[in-house]
Image (cartoon, rainbow, N blue to C red; front, side, top):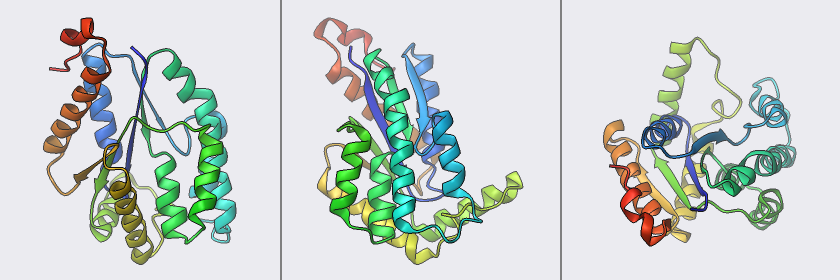
Length: 225
């Protein structure tokens, strides 16, 4: 069976990383060849770029410079991790991908959406997720979650988390626009619901996708239970 590419999107504190890891554990327990990665990051080069992007000391970073850094990390991730894994028939779960750049740098920063679309196409080599889960949460509630998490871990907020609520509201509106334009791919989930309920919905949708992708002879073995 060909590989599947599934992404998780959402604002700060929406729980997308938690849900990704829950799905990863479930897939592996069912004997599926699945890997996780994240954007930005996921490669040695990407990790260095991620540090630059999230460093709260980089307050003077120009929006266009920020955009190019995200695209550079993404290009490396696609070339080094995602495409090879898909070629091996693996399920790739990615914490953020090109939709994040549309939402954050396009709608949040106000950069030209056509430019972002072109750069995303170059960085991804035209690769698009088979399925995207959008964890939708009120930005103020999400930031409160993120800040509580930072306190628990004794960590500092990153550069993006320190943006004003109005910025994150624009990001959320951008995600809503993406979902409305691509409803077959993007599954919007109410992130204020319980984690178990959300995880169940994700598992059911992924099972449907796996069954649809499997050859007829494999249909009986494709259920995640």
